[in-house]
Amino acid sequence: MKIHESAENYLETILILSHSKSFVRSIDIVNELDFTKPSVSVAMKKLRESGYILMDADGYITLTPSGRSIAEKIYERHTLLADWLTQLGVDKETAVEDACRIEHVISAESFEAIKRHVGMTNKP
Image 1 (cartoon, rainbow, N blue to C red):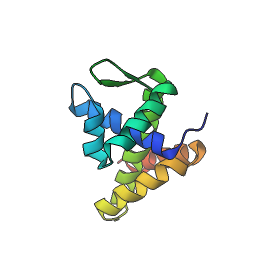
Image 2: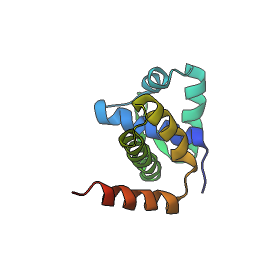
Image 3: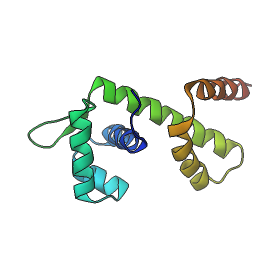
Image 4: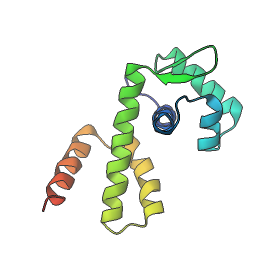
């Protein structure tokens, strides 16, 4: 099932925040993405209803296995593409912004080819 780019971004953000925080709440997402509280609240409701996140009574958000799978896929794409573009001489800020756009539209086949290429070119 294809999910929207915005949903992928939210899931990726939850994953990234969970690396540095013991728990993630909607306000953390608001602060990280600089979105409004109502926008994040609506998105969290949709992600919860779609089975991508769980939210407990205290508002702590955790990724479900399907949500984590999507988040990890997007995060892997983001980090590899941003690093690769930076290695090619692209300014870090531009590389991160471009990777953020590319990560959502690149096919699995093309991404795997880039992974193979980067793996080969990074070896001594």
